[in-house]
Length: 471
Image (tube, rainbow, N blue to C red; front, side):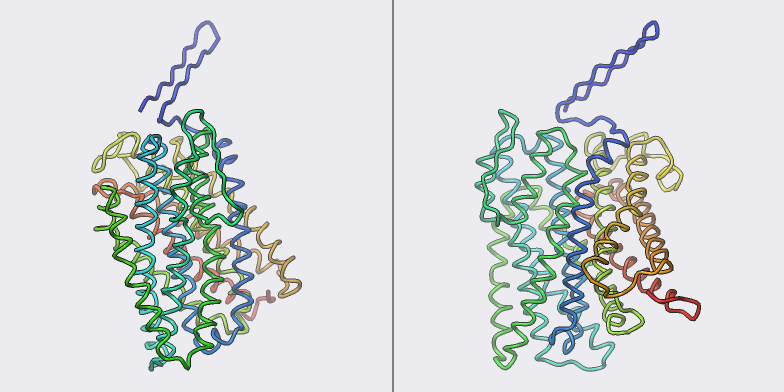
């Protein structure tokens, strides 16, 4: 790693020499904004589309008969986003630190990472269904075996196919057509290329054109996942519910996908760093799934209440945007720590007062600068997403000023809390020798799901209080 930044001032003139090879130099607020803005807006519009899809499918028979499917929605959407964003964060760090410049290194890194998320998605998809059934039993006091089987099969199938869409089968083609010399990106792929292929191409391409992958990879990764996962869950659960009389079908589906886990383990173990994640990286995604399931329980209990009409369409947006922004910040801090320190020791400029809100949001440090940029993007972005939903819904609900004010306040509070927790959590993990790329993002996005759903429900409650005016 080579980072040279020389500034000389002589007789009123300033001469600056900057050279960076696999290194990092401080970014201005304008550069951060320019790199983050487009992926942020694109991902937010994708989540608005996911919200509109969820608003449509909530009236399907399977959602009205098996309401626990709503508990699965944040858990599976969050799982897909977590796996994609941790993948993006790991690959961004690897690309920024020169670990993907050699074709052989790039090939091993990509394949092992994709195999890892395939295994994690299948296992956690099964556990998410178990959690949904358990929460359903606690609230309803009984369990329907047929419905539980449909939930398990739907969850595992959705998680497996969503993870498969990350493009394991085309990783070889990617590693062949992306060349280091000359520094250009040339990817020949059909328009139906899996989202993971696009994401890996974005990361490596960003590296080649001088754009920080941390600023663009995580929001694009999330935008590619939410709508796909929501559609897969709705379609899979509807098909399995339609054929519920074939009692053996859900168990056979579950067994088939669970038997594929050893194959993914074998492929993932080829890379030593991923082998370690395969051994110790389960706690974050499982705990994150549990936290998101609590948010799903809130959604399950409010989505059918007339006073909360619109919860289904707004939940993916507020949760997804908050998760995207905090994932960007966590990925940036993690990359910074990988540059300038080793696990277990914080850099000198990050070791003092690292839990002070003034240091996190108001200092001149580069990560504080990015935190301010991300906070400033919240309100304009959500206004655009609200307007898009309003246009596409065609009068589904009038967005009154009180609702917009409450919604924007909830979104802003959610992001500020998440960014604060991200700064504290990433540094705490680094001091304990844990890689934040693998551990922080699942916790943070799951917390974003819980805070977003709770704050959104509170906003609807305030709007529909006796002094409210309705949505």
